[in-house]
Image (cartoon, rainbow, N blue to C red; front, side, top):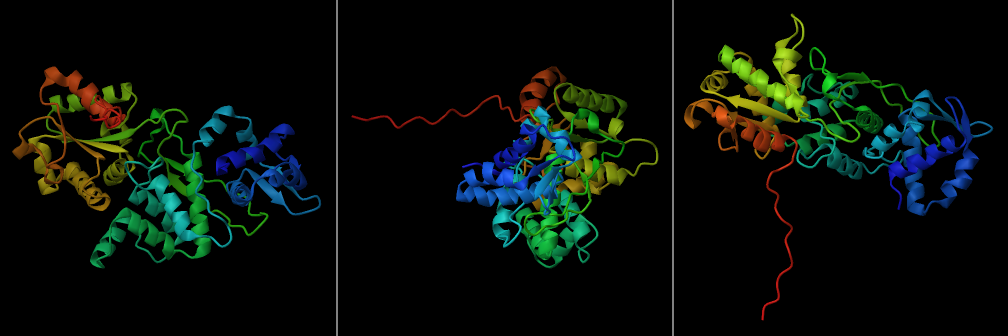
Length: 399
């Protein structure tokens, strides 16, 4: 049984075998006789889902003329002969549902599997980022993610991400839902980040190109939408890690810079105000909110001064702490996104309330820095534990 990506490549193969360039066509009857007729009934259902999806996302256009054909676009031409892009695309999820008689519950369950669970989602999208997909499609929701969550709390509605993601989608009419799924598909396909892709305000804005709207069946026009993108390399994921810390002393700031530098040297995109904040005049709250919500992990460098600022909600640390607390409340107490790093002080005077009881890395002793950095912090970020549970064997036979 072929999946969506495999069927997409079979369609693209018709262009490849004819050495097509942008603007060249493949007759629909060729697709019919050499591909569609050879698929089993379930694969044929997937074919039309994929066929329309590839039109929505701009790889080719459909012309219901004489002769009936599909025409390769510049985007499609750039893609089909690039082996690296093809290899990467085969790993991307397909989330665009069936165009007509859509089973929206089924579509959501599939979407959630890929973008929802923080521990298992292959293409995790956090609450504030998901809300940005919804806002252009809906005029009667609060103007910010924070206000939306506050509204739900006041109404005693669940702030579980799976609940409000589903509620937000169901709030849209059917045509807007289709636009949403197309835009998320475009986002998942176009999202590629490396360590060098940070911008002054840590905003990765990529305008989605307009896709054609003519299909074999009913069509949906995807909207042009700017989206914040974090990273996926075809063969290696570079984790984005924001460092939250207090400006305790010159020595402490130098230690933080050294930590961030070593993270970058070891395959981690360390997001630090010292080099990611940008030029004078940049809005600090915007930087902090983006950095926290769009990073896969956040290191909280705990010291007595850091805790004091969190308690008083003072300065940048206080603002960051309010965002961190909100994310923990929204995503659930079991989230492992936030890494407590113990730098100075004691449990009582250095650990903020929301981080109490969480497993931390103790880096108070500089003589153990390398050991702690490599075997605790770095391994955890790269999801390469030092100790792995062995496979459970078979029960022995007892006499």
